[in-house]
Length: 175
Image 1 (cartoon, one colour):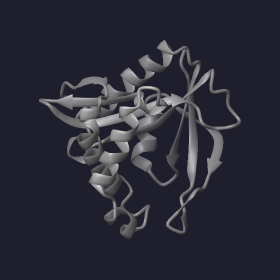
Image 2 (tube, helix red, strand yellow; image 1 turned 90 degrees about the vertical axis):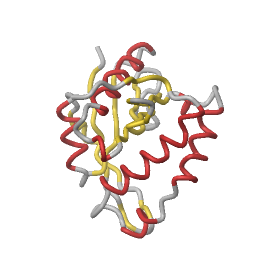
Image 3 (tube, rainbow, N blue to C red; image 1 turned 180 degrees about the horizontal axis):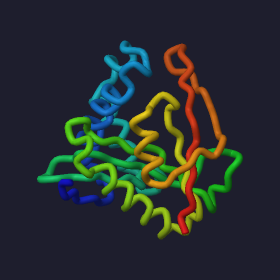
């Protein structure tokens, strides 16, 4: 396993986060999402999204982490209070996203991000962590289950480009 440096994301990280996001989506969601949707992903649009979110220190999205090695971003995570109306955002944190460049899958960036994300959530006194994952994303589900997450019965199927994308909710205690 390679050593990764994990730290809070800053504005200058937006292009690297965007590159990782697009590459990860295209690899992880091939065969799950429409090929046209994945082909249309824009690194520049994703970079602008992250620049806007990281530029606002009051933004909950500014709570993002990056894993880097030799100056290159290999993955990122974003997290904060849960967004689900059936859960208490004062007690439940949510991992909104965790993406790793497919070129470094299996090289330790995911676990490094995971560890610091849990530390950050605990420091903010969240008692529980939840996350949503595409039902068909077997690789991600194996990763979350290996980290100790379990299904909690939550399900949703948002529509993306006219196609439903079933999701499952995972949960774990942070104590």
